Figure 1 (cartoon, one colour):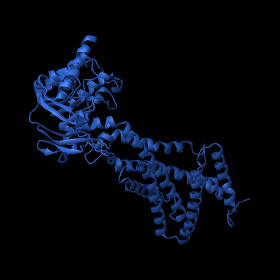
Figure 2 (cartoon, each protein chain N blue to C red; figure 1 turned 30 degrees about the horizontal axis):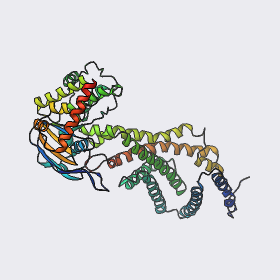
Figure 3 (cartoon, rainbow over the protein chains, first blue to last red; figure 1 turned 45 degrees about the vertical axis):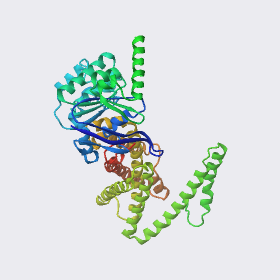
Figure 4 (cartoon, rainbow over the protein chains, first blue to last red; figure 1 turned 60 degrees about the vertical axis):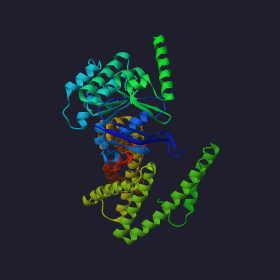
Length: 250
Length: 254
């Protein structure tokens, strides 16, 4: 599953021609885990939403398997590159209805065993599947939304801060599950996170966004050890100070 | 004693006393509705007088072409009015026109074919007007509800799209809610009619000298036909329009 991003740009406001980001060029040639880092407001989520075909770009394009975005049927594209939102949205009905969404939509048999396994790995084995999904807690909703997307089994998953609302234990379980999934099935993960530790442990490559562009596109280790740009150094420093403070507060 | 309005237009002059009351209250209470009251008054007077003369002419001419022309005009005006609820949806006008036209053909066609109304301009035109008018309200309500539902359920729709749903699948639940909400007032009216208000058609017939039983017979007929016209127009406009909330790439319009 190859992805090539070419001169991609998105405007904040088309009337004033101010760019959220522009001229993003990069490619993914083999299964990997990419962490998208950067300060708030750099367009990380927007970039994910463009890749997931929920938003149109204002400039440039994306190629999936050497075929340009507009030549793809949007539905076929989304079955290969699936976006998981930061705010988990429960679909009407029970937990089981939510788990069965993919099988209902695509008239596939429901893989109950896989669903149960995934739920268990995210410490959700105690959840009653007949319970209305709307009644779950925020963290449970987030984990259920993740399982629901994993049941689609797309080759590329776009994760928009999916662990942000989870407690430490669930967060680690979700990270473990996603990394294992990548190793076992070759699923590519493109992961927006504000958690530097999460990015350092889970990701192989970092896309760092700053100054309205993709400022760095490098190996994870290289990014954390020797960031090239001033912005990246500042970002890491701020992040480390923040992490240290959190540690002290704990 | 029976009053008639033939002859002079003095009655109209006195009828404006009602408008004067409304104007007075608006000025007194500083409602700022004077302009709307005046425009409404002038438009309703001119439009109704004009249609009165037109109908007089059409009834006398008794030509099927004139009947069709009047019905077509009703459909176009109703479509224009309903389309104003969703100006951001390009192509909504002809979709509304088509659903209103099909609703009119099925409902009026059935009324005529089953021999429930005689195919004369005196019956076809007023009843068509009522069917198209009621369908226009259903269509307007659908568009208003759909706009609101799509905005409120953006997350739900996008979640389904991300799971590989077609636009139809993604919008299905939202569409169903909007269709249902647009039809409810029609059925609510059916439940209270005769108890809360005497409908216009029936009142008109009684005032014009028809027996209440005869007036009620037509009113029942029209109310029952409203139930099918509401369902037909709501389902048709939903099927014809849901794609308009999506881009060609099946993304929700921002």
